Amino acid sequence: MFGEIIFACGLGIFLGIISGIIPGIHVNLLSVIVLSLSPILLHYFSPLGLASFILSIAITHTFIDVIPTTFLGIPDASQALLLFPSQKMVLQGKAYEAIFLILIGGLGSLLFSFLFLPVFFISTEIIYPYLERFVGWILLFVCVFLLFREKEKTWACAIFFLSGCLGLLVFAFPLEQGLFPLFSGLFGISALLLSFRNTLSLPVQEKTLPSLDGAYKAISCASIIGWIASFMPGLGPAQAASIGTSIIKLDEKGYLILIGGLSTVNMLLSLLSFYLFDKTRNGALVIVAEFLQIDFFSFLILLFVALSAGGIACFLSLFFSKKFLQIIPQIPYKSFTLGIIFFISILVILLTGWLGFLILIVSTALGILPEMKGVAKSHMMGCLLLPVILYFLL
Image 1 (cartoon, helix red, strand yellow):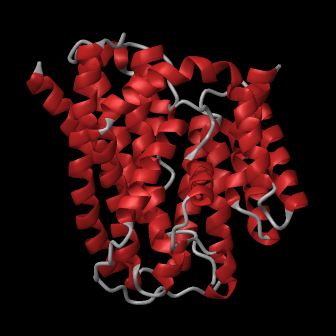
Image 2 (image 1 turned 30 degrees about the vertical axis):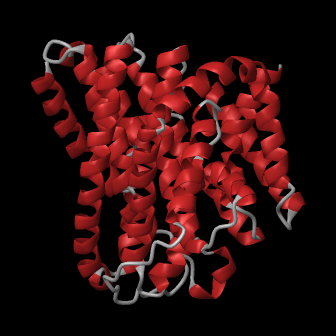
């Protein structure tokens, strides 16, 4: 059995590298493909082996995805107020430092969460049954809090509402992969188009290591906030990061560690909700729940799969990022960006048809608005949050 788990984990890491390094291929998409092939795969894998395969894809993706996320969709330097901290560091020739900080956040939070898992285990078991009845109200409060932190409150509310309405429409459409064109437009192609219009030449990137002062503070914050987000449906890393920075003051480097931690720890701690309450809070575990009845033994196996995949993926991401740094200055940025936009568009048409392509166009147009109006793009997560809030409150 353990040989099968190791093989499944290794294969999952390999596919996680592919999904992470190629923009437009999301881990949820691969998970759905695995589910569609599960009648065949279950002849060769046990349900636990197949679950290990999917989980290792998801964990690896969160680490490898750092590379394209750091380099793609960068606005011009004149738009400094709209730049994400990692994008500022790319324009300063410090992309490797940014990637290193995000990966340290991911790996550090993974280890922190594992060490304090008994605490999270007991706390979740006690607290969640009381919170469950108020999930809708808690999410509503979080959304209102984040919206009213914005200077452009009217535009922030409009973008949240429009995204929410678009999300409701997508869920109503007969599309199995409706979220793929929705998220590709809101957060992918829109950013690529905005960077495409600028005359952007990326500087030569240094391979220096950043200082890690205060890293423990960002890692512990990511683990605790990520734990809360793990049983709050629709609450993503961006919203969780805004909450975290409202509680603890972090500089830009600390913020990158926080973001890296939140992206990874949510996946690990979601296993708790899956085991304790049979609740799935991310796409990979939703697929796993289709064929696996989780017990304590399988929970432990999946826990160690997540740790193993995370540790290996962290070092692989550092390795690939060094290679990427060598070639990125020679890449014609505009041609490369245009190629990615074309690739995602073709992928959307193939997987979701012309209805999906229409969703992609509309969501791309909406995705351009936040940068034009100086509003955080995280408010476009209203596409998930508004449907979830209405589900719990109505």
